[in-house]
Image (cartoon, rainbow, N blue to C red; front, side):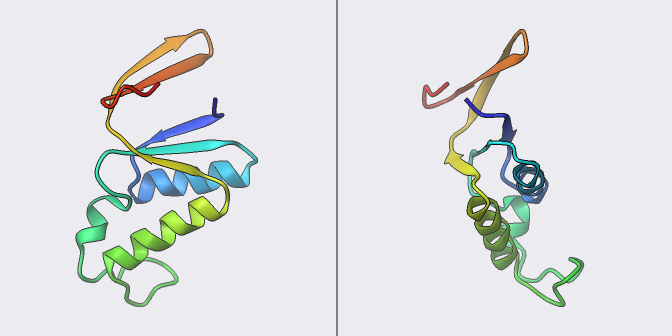
Length: 98
């Protein structure tokens, strides 16, 4: 059981995980392909504060490392269903996880 589950491990999802972890929440990030999202395939990224120039892969790796260092758990699975029961959500994955 986690306080927050983030579906999608791109920059927005990983940033959400980092902020949630800083607020003391337990976080699981589920990504279906690879952490970093589409930016990971960019040969150069020049519009991120704090980085004059970085490859998309380097940026994605840094985001993932930061989230994990703060305590995020990560899984490579595809979410296929979300069900709500009161205040609790159950997330099912293609691989059969809940």
